Length: 473
Image (cartoon, rainbow, N blue to C red):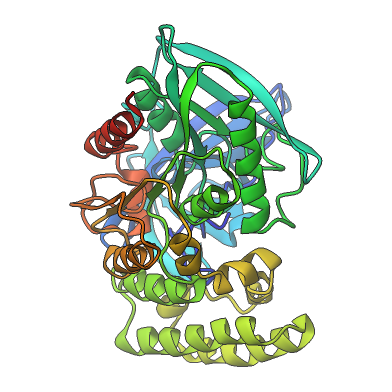
């Protein structure tokens, strides 16, 4: 998924980007044979790794791997080979494998190999699987929960979502949640977290109705996600507003967009007279090209990349982004991108791994730069859109957000609202929070899955109080 905008930058070692890996299909008759776990050192971060070995009725072995700290389970292991003194797991989908040597205590001392890089990994038998704690996920719902379908007439598709309505007679203010980039379900689920589930629960418990929905082509929503741009997603959000407008019992309708959703919310507010307020959660005030350049450099500075690698990345990425913006012909653009990418081939294996450069698969990453969504994102300037917004606006950004850096974006958002004459806005830079509004240490994406908190409560309370104040009779 495109949740991390940096196309050439890995968010973790095991799973590149934030996409969910393919889920293994274990034979029904297979039963767990043994579970091994260990800890993989990735820079300053320790990632827990779990291998689960199964045996069927014919004593054939199969296996899966979990990376609990990245929210990934049942990753297919293509082959598991056990001898008297060694064990090996092959994972071609990740371009990885593990080799271990048996120790006297029954554990294995070995190495994890992935993308030309190797790291030490010792594994030992364990009796229980690792459970990731997500204490904020609601266990009960003291309000009305309704699965709904609504139609986007412009695209002729139906979108599926969940409408949560507070207890009581109302009327209540209502909010449409707009997800960030990449195929998202209604909970905006990623890396073991469900931010929109937690946020909608908090809003609804405090008197605010919420409509959250699966992106087009995701979950049970119709449509094709792959061919859509931000403007298509804006039409989907507009359809959600129209659906809420058709209901009675809502005193006001607003939009709360996260990341790319914060780019989409002002577009919808300008094209719909039914939007009464908007909230930009880590929304952008710069073009995508400007964002990517800042984001990539900030995230890389949190890694162990060499100074030479960082400078090469900065120069090459800037040139590539300009090619994607300037050259409309895909074939010509791809040729130029390939030429520019050759600079990565001279870097050390470690720098290549950090950047996410793999000569065998890099063409797919280059083609992603030419996707209609990416081309739109690179050139879409939110500033003239924000200048036209006349409804109340709340802007929140984490102080340690490395994906949408607060200093540069908040200043541009403020300037655009001022130029448009909108004085009914608040802007908050929230101390110690990252792009997902988690309390963090560095803000680096690799931390997201390691943090138990899904959404900082003080941030949710700020938004709740702002909505209720703006919509009070």
